[in-house]
Amino acid sequence: MTTQDARPSNAPGHGLDAGRAEAFLADFATMSAFGATGNGGVDRQAATPADIEQRRWLQSLLEQHGLRVEYDRIGNQFGLLELVPGAPYVVVGSHMDSQPTAGRYDGAYGVLAATHAIVRIAEELRETGELPQHNLAVVNWFNEEGSRFVPSMMGSSVYTGLMPLEAALAVTDHDGVSVQQALEPTGFLGDGDGPVAACCAEIHIEQGRLLEDSGTTIGLVTASWAASKYVVTVEGEQSHSGATVMPDRRDALLGASMLVVFARELADRFPGVLHTAVGQLDVYPNSPVVVASRVRLLLDLRCADEAVLAEANELLAAEIARIEERASVRLELERSHEWGINPYQPEGVALARSIAEQLGYPHDEILTVAGHDSINMKEIVPTVMLFVPSIQGISHNEGEETRDDDALAGLDVLTGVVRQLAMGGLGASTR
Ligand code: GLV
Ligand code: MN
Ligand code: MN
Image (tube, rainbow, N blue to C red; front, side, top):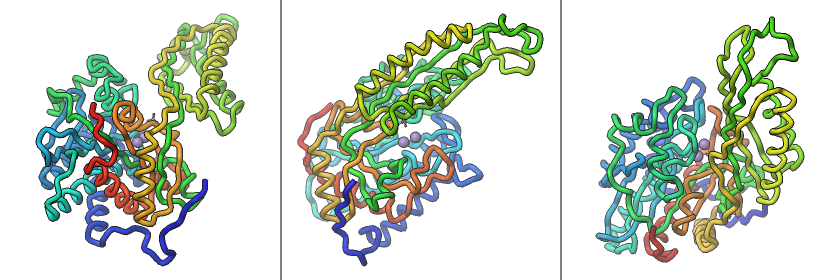
């Protein structure tokens, strides 16, 4: 990465005035208390009490600032500022749900930054009397993480028409509770489709360390890595772990373990291009003195090259047959979620670059390896995605951290981008 450092070396780490900076950091601290864990992180899986409480807090924050809060049929939370009756919206935000024992920044930073950006733009418009071309909406997408309800990016997938509503509402968690059942008592299930979008912006922590390593403050996201995610079921036969003779065993956990190891070997064949992991393993009956009869696991492949991902998927299919043979088990693979390397609209990247340049922040282009709701949104409207640095690239971990100056610099750039988008900076294509 090359870095263009336009900011004078004696400039503060961000260009916001002290009042706005303090207000953002104070709200960020309040927000981080929802689902706080012992080690500085959070646990706010979708539609759990911590996520619900936090959404209620966001609703009151949005309402205090004069935004009207609305929920769509999959529980996406919108804070609407209608300045031009009937005009479509610049939809700005991210997600506030988290992984278990996760960090404070992933997603939540982007929703709060969207809120502060929109509130500031509204104040400025009121002062100048200018009329924007589009209305403004903060969004807190439902279940981006997909940790409680698979797949990830669920709310934005339904909003963009990439996942049928009924299928999303029917997804169940580990205890058999469906999305519909989890959301119904909260009052977060609306009866509409949400605001009509003209364009979209999202800011997020990088979750890697390219920005930090290169001394870059603002990442201009040009495209996403591709992904294939699988739900795998390994079927064996329950038996006595001591008494059953070894040749008679059909050990589902052995088959699952072979797949876990193979996933790592697969990534090692394509260093730097393919990332793989098994992130969840449910073993049945998971009991002492019992050979497991069934394992369900989630396998995740991320790739910087679609041809390599296709090859990796083929190698995986071939390995399945070998594992079935060697462990005397049956494996069933269902591809639960998939996306390609689709670029963000170049005119959005150019717009973000010009704002970062004007404001004097070191910036550069970057790819996103993690999934984001903006990956869905860019399929339907022009979308700008920004990153700020993650300290040491730590993420999905309670130790996830971003420097205050970087978080505030990101808010500054996001505000500039959303201001331009509101004025029609990327035209007016609508969902
Ligand atoms: C979601 O955050 C993902 O990367 O899949
Ligand atoms: Mn996220
Ligand atoms: Mn995440």
